[in-house]
Image 1 (cartoon, rainbow, N blue to C red):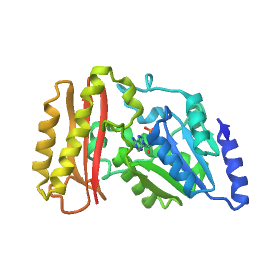
Image 2: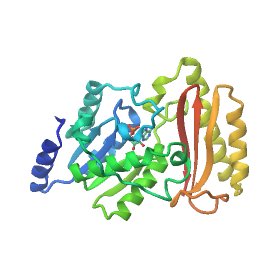
Image 3: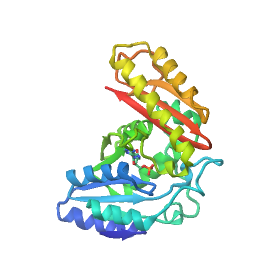
Image 4: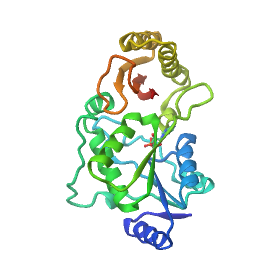
Length: 280
Ligand code: AMP
């Protein structure tokens, strides 16, 4: 497996693969990889001749008071996992390689970023779209894999690819959870043992909301009320948002009558966790 730090080396290698007629799958990540990331890499390996995984903690998608400095990192373990899972290349650039002096181009998506995490983290998706656009231009993948764990991100990337005519197929992959239901996340490592237990309230509320709709409840507000009630029973939990939106446009929606995304963001202590379910 190649481990590359420069854009030039990635482009050179991908060009060689292309000349051999090979297809390229791509999994962008911020590293500290777990089984959620691994499921994306696995799927990419199944569907492409060569798979590139990027590991880059992207500074421009963090707000000024967010966890950029403390974000967990373990490049050696990440490379081992990528190699074991069948990736052909890890691209792990320095910040200066991605954002050279005078860097000034940004990709701003409107509409689809107005609610949910886009509302709570106003500069987040500009950072995500900019780095993903750059990575797409560097790796030129046939297919790129994103987790439904970050459902709004997946929707935003789909809109970006459509609106800017990017030549890549975006593949969404289901949420991988711990045995007790907590959605796997690199940020789970911030939780104390007590907070780890408290964090289960997210998946409990997600399960309850999903079960209500599956049992025939169409009124979104009633579903969200019940989810908020469950979340408010946990003293360590502080709700950022609990919302139902159309899955295609990420506009607020009050009826479970079209494909909907029900998404939550909750602070457990100082750690902000997200979870969701999608009903197609
Ligand atoms: P991150 O490293 O957090 O930026 O995540 C990189 C990619 O992995 C994103 O597309 C995430 O949605 C995806 N991902 C993270 N956690 C999970 C999970 N528990 N299940 C499925 N995909 C995930």
